[in-house]
Image 1 (cartoon, rainbow, N blue to C red):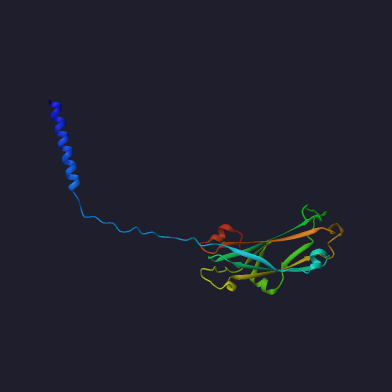
Image 2 (cartoon, rainbow, N blue to C red):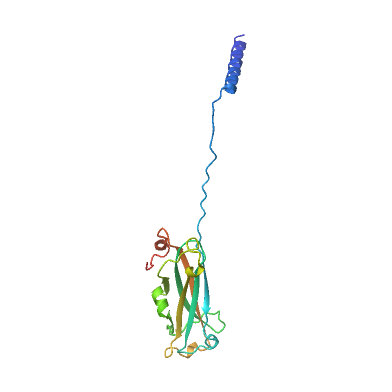
Amino acid sequence: MKKNIIVSIMVILMAGAMITGATYAWFTDSADPIVNEFTAGTVEISAEETVFPAQFMVENWNPGDCAEKEYTIINTGTKGVYIRAVITGSWFEPDGVTPFVPDPDEDVVTWDLQDAGSAADWTMVGDTLYYNEPVDGSYTEADEAARTIKLALKVCLDGTGTGNQYQGKVFKLTAQFEAVQKSNGAVDDVWPSNPY
């Protein structure tokens, strides 16, 4: 009997709690959520060679010949960037695939800035050329011409130092252009030896 009384009291208390909870209310409200969107900027460049050496130099390069190379680099991204060019050169057998190592291994090919304009705009550190100023992105500069830079190189095959071992061999000059955002000191993290 005692047990039935306890169960009855529990049922009454639970029913009372449910009734109180169902009828007990406060005025409430909530605002619409505020969503912040952040679109990351882009670092993108394009590079093209706009001046090629004369065809006879491509197929029949002679000791003492110099070729002129001009590159056009455009900041196509939204962010301002620093730009550099890493210039490398390698000799290959006539098939253009098998590496050729001269004996003795001499530097008979030189490359340097071709004109005063390039010399004023670029700084050479080893075989790397750094464009002296940041180049604006499309977010702040709509005019593509203002986001376009040039690099002119003169590539020469030494006249007196190039011996017979180079006959028929293929020299490949590679210009690799790279960019890093100009903001927040990124250039010092990415290119620690930069001249900026």
